[in-house]
Length: 150
Image 1 (cartoon, helix red, strand yellow):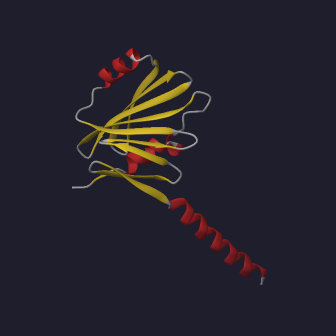
Image 2 (cartoon, one colour):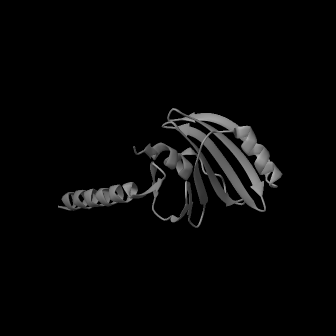
Image 3 (cartoon, helix red, strand yellow):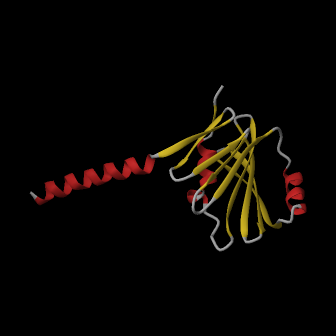
């Protein structure tokens, strides 16, 4: 009897966890949509979108072309301290990640091309917070779920 009760409770718990884990909001910028976990407030203007919660401020822009060195020069001129840069591939998408610090805020700038469109995403967090790893990084979730609507 106890085994049946534990099995039923386990199945109910598994179902509830599954429902919670897959719940996300879908956002649209221009012709591009993507999903992100619940809990973000939204502000948008033209082809720019800003999402924020207690931990992060994320901006996303669709741009006509990618110019990583020009982006770096511009941010340094604006007073950002360049920390480092790396290039890597995620799900077949080549990404340039540049990290900066300015006035107590770490800014990670990701530029990439997906589905024939160029994007820049910045992830901003307080400097006492750790930059999230791949699996926990909301930018990874955005890039992974991006789709272009025609």
